[in-house]
Length: 165
Image (tube, rainbow, N blue to C red):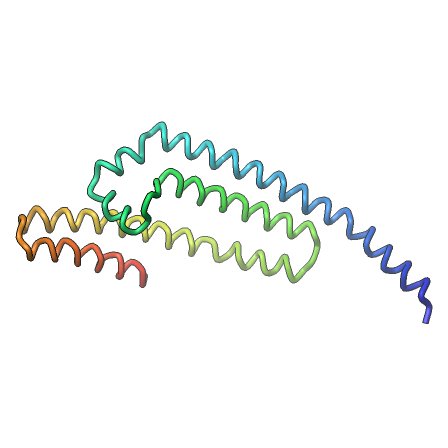
């Protein structure tokens, strides 16, 4: 058993891997900064368009408040944008490590991302539809006890259906 040769092989392997590690860290740092900047721009753009104020004035706000208390849509969308960009950079950074298993895993995560985006869109549209349905039930049925029950059940039913889509 040649201990010197084994030690030399380990040191060589470490120094061969070091540029990959530095590339990984640089890509991760750049991705974090870019994602933060783009998320801040998206949030400021949504604030300038007064999306949160429009949402507060609509019937959807009550249902959104029940589902996600204290959350503003501009914060949620900015967070989604941040994580989407960061995951893209993370995939590139893991590819820079040149570890085939990790790269394959991240490619599978990246391939699944459109499903997550569609699920978010379905959930947001369902929340809008639930608010409109509750508003419609309230207008059609008036201020009766049955209307209150229907105005509570219909949006919940819409959200449950959206959950299973």
